[in-house]
Structure formats: structure tokens, C-alpha cells
Picture 1: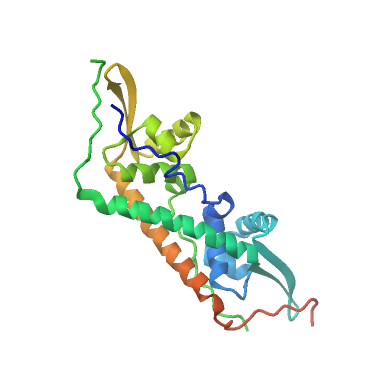
Picture 2: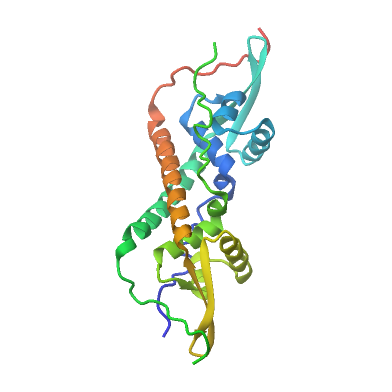
Length: 129
Length: 129
């Protein structure tokens, strides 16, 4: 008498790419998607509220995965590190987003359906019958 | 001549609760939000495409944080573990979702604005001027 609620992996969200999903990296990638011209290190640090160490560490991961491009140069005599999304970074971010939207829709449907009666509630006995 | 792009923490998404954000737990919570009557262990395992070990481990974290309620009982003579969202779990999940929607909107705006010209591109010289 088991209910048919299970569809293999229906809520697995395999498309939530682990590299992108980590919160600090998600923050960095959204900042960069919003600033196509790129952002310098100090701007990213501020927008994402990250420490130097954390930002560096996550940028290394993103660069290793070829999601961002990092160029060291100068503005006048001051060293400046410019970070931009790569083309494949942009594509992977968009793919990630579409999976995220699927999750948000599933969850919204669930949280809005709050008042509907239950189809068939689970009943558990405290002891074997 | 620095641009004014930085608003402290504008893209930090502090509301992305670390307990909820982890991918497997996000999958578990969305499944549970969608099934208010609760889900038994084997159903959750299937919906989230998780192994027994992984599901147990993440359920421990969610229970510890009081996001889920776990009841061990029987259906007939068969032992059955029923998992449900708690009231506070539901509230925290809804809060998390609203931050997630903010991120999705920011990102959509960014990715749809693909073709607009750059306001003021960064220029880096290879060497100090």
C-alpha cells in the first residue's frame, strides 16, 4: 500500500553545479555577470563582503574551472587585478540559473499550496500492529 | 578616477542560510515542502537521488537545526521513518527562498542585459605608465 510519490531524482537538482553553487562563488559570479566590463579585486571584495583571503581562494577555484579570467595590470602606477567572466563561465552560470529557477518554482508551488488538504497522510503506529 | 560600482555587500546574499543552501539539503527541504504530509526515508532517498549514508548525514544536520522532525514508527510490522518539515523549518525555508529569488532576479537582469554597451570599460596597461 505504498503511495506513488517517488520519481527517481525528481528533486535532486543535479544541475546545481557545485563550483557555482557555493555561496561566496555565487556572489562573485552574480557580481561579475552584472558588470560585464569586469571588476577589480577591491570592488568585488566590497560587493561580495568577502575578506582578501576568502576572495582570493574562491577566485583561484573559479579560475581553475575556467569560469573567470584574471588579469594583473596597472592603472597609472598602481597595480590592479581585473576579474571577468569568461564566455564558458557565463554559459555555465546561465545553465546553473535555469536549474535554480526550476527549484524556485517547485518550492513556490509547494509553499503557496499551504492550505490544500493532504492527499493521503502518512500514519505511523507507535508499535507494530 | 575610481568608478562608483561598489555598494558594500550588494551581492553578498547573506540570507542564503548555510544549513539550507547545501545542495543535498536543499533537495531534501524542497521535497518536504512539496509533501506536507511528510515523506518516509525510502521516498526521500529516491526523490533526492541520495545514498542511505548521505541522506542520514544530512537529516542529522537538519534535525539538529530543528528544520525537520523525524519519527520512527511502524506501518504494520515494518519499521518506517517519517520525516517532516517543522514549522520553523518551513519559515526558514521560505526566508531562504526569498533571498534566492532576489539573486535570481539580479542574475536574470544581468544575463538579459547582454547586448547593452559598457558604461565605462576598465582599461589596464600592461606596465606602469
